[in-house]
Image (cartoon, rainbow, N blue to C red; front, side, top):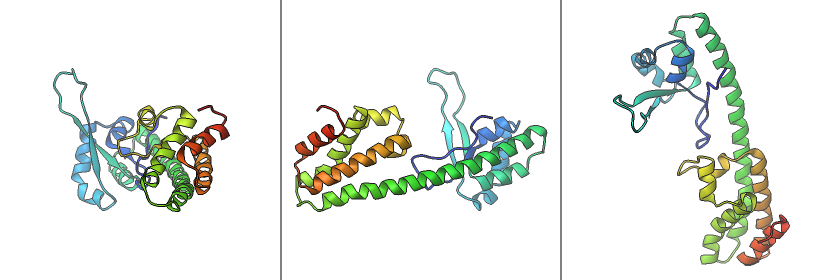
Length: 218
């Protein structure tokens, strides 16, 4: 079956969720009826977590029609909602697959949180190295300069280009969107940069050293 459960890569504190549109499509219900059911029991739903919505916009040149409101629901909210639906064969199969995917997504979210936590610790090695430098413009801009340099070395692209490539929101963190393999490479270069910074090398020497260590010509 298709993907039914999602996580927000930009906010790893948010729990896995599905949408009223998914429930409608795979539960054999009219989306209008699913929304009405949610609205009827909205007070109970809110006791199980925040009930948020978003809208899908019509194509620019489409005729008529208002944007469609879609609800985002967590596992408890969905479980409660589905108990209010008739147990047809399609609904039972949907419940079964939804349960499997919520479990799998919780496991994935846990792994991402661990990776994120490890990434923060790794990044602290870089920030700690910078903290040890004398105050000044060089120190103020070194963190962002080194970060841009690392992504340039690994991807040969700017941070802006990479955020566009991976569809990272404006306030999103690029680290949450690249693969685990690529993130591991970022961490290696951050540790290398931290060592060079602690040696009090100027930025140009750090840049040359990182390019040379990673077998790329400046």
